Every structure is written in C-alpha cells, then in structure tokens.
Length: 102
Image (cartoon, rainbow, N blue to C red; front, top):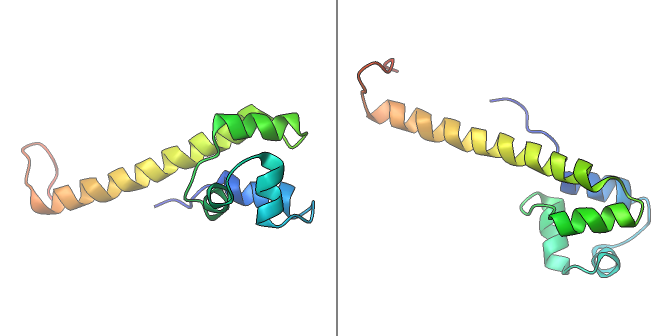
C-alpha cells in the first residue's frame, strides 16, 4: 500500500483554523456549518463539500477547485485501498481460471 495523501481536513486545520486562532465552535460558526461536520472533516471521516470549498475560496482561503481536487485524490486513494483489500480476500478464497493463484 502507498502512503495516504493528506485529507483536506488536515489542511483546513493547519492552514485556516489554527492560524486564525479559532476553536471548532467558532470555526464552524464562521463557515456556517455544523460543528460535528467540521470535526469529522478535520478527523478525515467526512469530505469537504463543493459548497464548503466555495465558502473557503470566497473567504480568501484557497481555491475551491484545489480543495475539491485534494478531496477527490484522497477519495480515490481510499477507494483503491478498499478495492485492494477486497481483491486480496477474494483471491485467497477463490481460484479463478486465468487468475494467478496466491
């Protein structure tokens, strides 16, 4: 497995929330989003939506397409890791003609 790309929530925390000295409550209020959603973004368990990416851009905190691109890259990596585990589990239990045995 390759190393995970950075989830944009980590970037949001590092480049926006911390430099502004905001806590999660204040940051969520300023972004007009729910605190649990923001917490999940920062923890990497929720995605940065297109709407949030636009809000960040309009507030001068990066480009919306960059935020979304970083999210897509992370999502694609995560999907590939999941697929790799599922394929490996399948390979261990099933012999398919033409498919190399484990």
